[in-house]
Length: 284
Image (cartoon, rainbow, N blue to C red; front, side):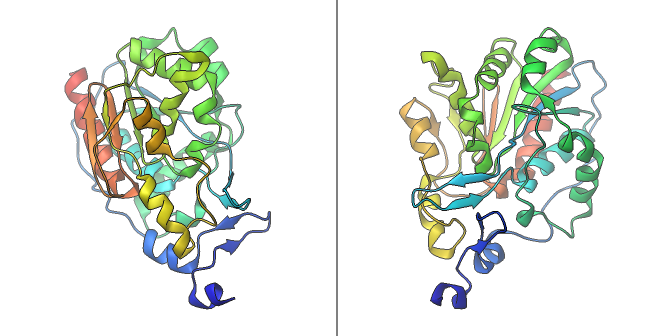
């Protein structure tokens, strides 16, 4: 009751899960974004496709048994997409089994016209995405038409995707075919899929920006999370040999070989710019 009066009690949703408290939403979300509408030299080559792997799962079970209402963070997904779209790239939206994409709609920047526009443009694909198995079966031979794989963050990126064999196959395919992999915040959890079936972690020794475990440990205090995380993302990646370059949930972005990463929602705009500039330079 005291936490509710102070505005730091997570909000109970109709399905029994919890979304962030009023205070947490005020501190961690905004009705607008820092998106920069840049006029890029539009790419007109044949490698114009980007496979975007989204989550189809909503609820994350915390250590205390409470479920966090999550999904992909809309800003982390849509700001990089805006930059890449403006540079001439197009997206194929996919989820593990073809179920609709799940967004953390409580974080949607309602007053940002650019974000609203691209969300509406791809809304039908978000509702009816491609199955990853279909991509593995039908599209991996079309490597000459793809530039990158994009996996947005949000805690929901840690649900299912790190243990999905098709994600592992696709990331290994991108790595072997020298495509770029773009991800941020909790999205780098997807990289763990390359270790399934006792395979070697293909990003060992890579520098990357990832959402810090230390921040996830603090956020239950203000009701952003309803409990402590089920597992620690940065810890898992470091144990496999990744070099985490950030200590804060800030706008840090990182390019190491063909892996492009960002630290948090605050990095979404800069990640988009880095991805565009890197792809345009490489594909020129």
